[in-house]
Image 1 (spheres, rainbow over the protein chains, first blue to last red):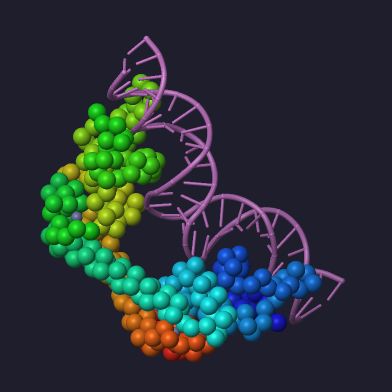
Image 2 (cartoon, rainbow over the protein chains, first blue to last red; image 1 turned 120 degrees about the vertical axis):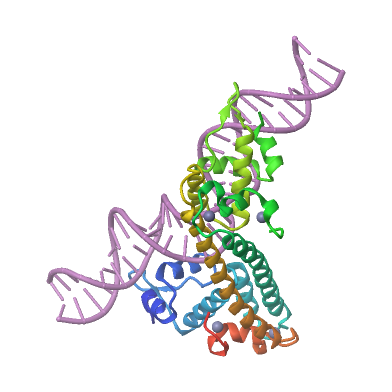
Length: 138
Length: 138
DNA sequence: TTAGATATCTCCAGAGACTATAGGTTTGGA
DNA sequence: TCCAAACCTATAGTCTCTGGAGATATCTAA
Ligand SMILES: [Zn+2]
Ligand SMILES: [Zn+2]
Ligand SMILES: [Zn+2]
Ligand SMILES: [Zn+2]
């Protein structure tokens, strides 16, 4: 039986975060010691590792909740799980696209000024005032 | 004199968001009508457009607050403004790098399953359970 | 002029995913 | 047995809005 601190050390998930996951319904409410402290088993360790890895890959809580629910029906087809992953991949790609546009505008803006002007002539300030100077929408 | 709704229509910033910016100190407290409603002038319109554009480029409120403060001293050198923009560019680039790593892992994971297995054999579920299957840290 | 429709006001709560604090209790080792 | 460390609950704060409730103001048209 592991304490919440043990679980934390083994998974790298902070103690308050573990409690938070329990509250959000990702982890089942743990058994308790006589003094009301949480006690965990190997199963919980595995589930928390799953959650942590999914979070590291950027999945949000509700997607993880769905994936956990799916994984409790091992004989069902995995279409929904795959769809969640594919949707997430798409959203990551969309974010990258948006950030690349920002990167281009910002790089352009930054390259036009060397930090050696007066504010009133600074290209950074002027481009922020006027989207017309931008090359793209964003 | 513009009402808050007029200002909202002209800048595309929602009414509660304008009030929020005032509260955060990005917009000066507006003049009021006899009935206590906010009334704006051209200057406010320009500043709100500046804020909006800066937000669209991903700058956060405190960076925008600094930029506004700087822009009130038109004869000072612009080094600080340029630094804020350059720092932000760097943070955008860092985010892109992280997302690209996620994208690669997710693409690999998604490509290994066609949605046609049982959950217990699904590569998506298995890779979430085991970071060892990943190619990179993330 | 007056009714009714629309816009505005303030204050408060919620979103997401934690993180931190305060004040109290349990546990484990010397 | 005693004390420090770990644990408990409850609550508030982070960030940038967004939406709602309930009250008041403004505008338009009859
Ligand atoms: Zn400059
Ligand atoms: Zn622009
Ligand atoms: Zn699958
Ligand atoms: Zn991994």
